Length: 65
Image (cartoon, rainbow, N blue to C red; front, side):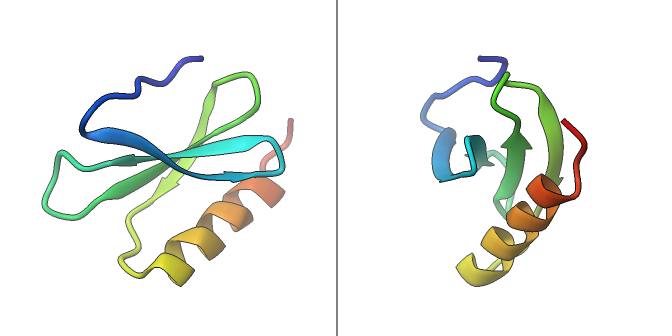
C-alpha cells in the first residue's frame, strides 16, 4: 500500500475495492482516495459525512483504472 496509517491518518471508508484515508493533520479533515493498487486518485475536504462519501464515490467512478 502506498498510504500510511497512523494516529492522524485513518481508513474511514472502503468502496468498490478502493480505500479512503482521512488525514486529520489540518483544521478540517481531508479524505484521500486510493485505488486497489494503493495509488492516490483524488481527495475531498467536505465536512459532513454524506458529502465526503458522495464525493469519494464520484472520484472512484470517474477515474480510469
